[in-house]
Image (cartoon, rainbow, N blue to C red; front, side, top):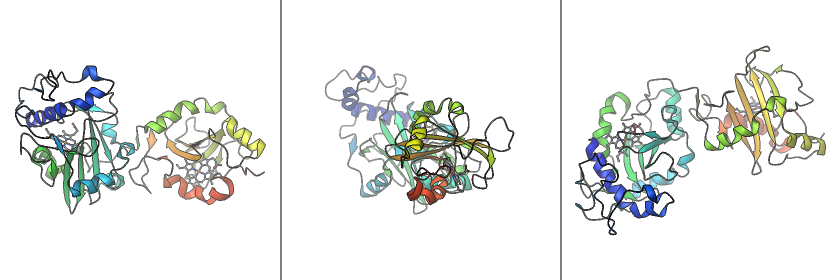
Length: 354
Ligand code: HEC
Ligand code: HEC
């Protein structure tokens, strides 16, 4: 099975050679040796030997227009690269199954709920979209492989980043890889059919992680809060106090100088760059907070984050189940803070008009 998949993917690699050649890493593109786009595939995986699927043997397009059904799933995947990743696949990982590509699987909110509730089989509406990168550092995938649950069945497809469907050249030659049973996908994933609803990466009978690797946007935020414990506190909250709001934790909030200035000038809403870091302790005298809850004003909006002190993003287990608590609108945060949205720019502790 591995060889079949590899051969198919080599065909893909050859087919997308023109695209790869346009990128800044052309030096690492498979050496095609010809101008016709025809490639033996050897450059991708010289150990292969199963090159029967290369375009040289099977002329025709490597990718075709997607079916209406695939297009409908594709539309629901808009922005999928920002979807959460499984804790088991937090970073691009070298995949033996997927043609030695670097893979990174993202899941949608329906899968997130199933992760928390341990629902198996996964319900309709579940989408897992997996990027397959040629190199670990690539930002544009070679292909996207997708599983979407609908009508109680997985719908599978393999597409280029712009939504064209890859044509199978080995298992069902000439057939676009899309539908409920493209052998290119199901033959291999069937080994997990009964035990884990065809899914490899996460065992849906096991608990999901409490926290996951931060998204790129959250990663960019961390350097900005470094050393926050030396920042000023709000005059209204100079020492830890127990709140009946943030899960009865002991809280203490710090803010940066942008907030200090907004307080002095009575600027409401506080401008971009405003940062508030709130520590949440389980007990009054604990040395280390359980969690940090953070608000960061960027592009005119608050960015919300709940994280462990060592930088992992905490997973929402109650509201948007299975989703990391980070971004413009994690309802775990905004549901409550919205009480102050219009009067005090979502903020509780200090009244910025005073
Ligand atoms: C040779 C075996 C093999 C083939 C063929 C294969 N997969 Fe996978 N797939 C895997 C394995 C193993 C994983 C787990 C992560 C990894 O190692 O890539 C996986 C992971 C995935 C995931 C992430 C969810 C999960 O199951 O963990 C998706 C989505 C996916 N594959 C889609 C596809 C699609 C679509 C096709 C057909 C184009 C396909 N796969 C073909 C072996 C395969
Ligand atoms: C149940 C309601 C509730 C929820 C849910 C909630 N907060 Fe709060 N938050 C408050 C209240 C009340 C205060 C002010 C009193 C205090 O310090 O606890 C506050 C204060 C804060 C502050 C200090 C700035 C200020 O004055 O508002 C930050 C930062 C903060 N919360 C972030 C978050 C984040 C991030 C989340 C989501 C993980 C969140 N909060 C969820 C009620 C809530």
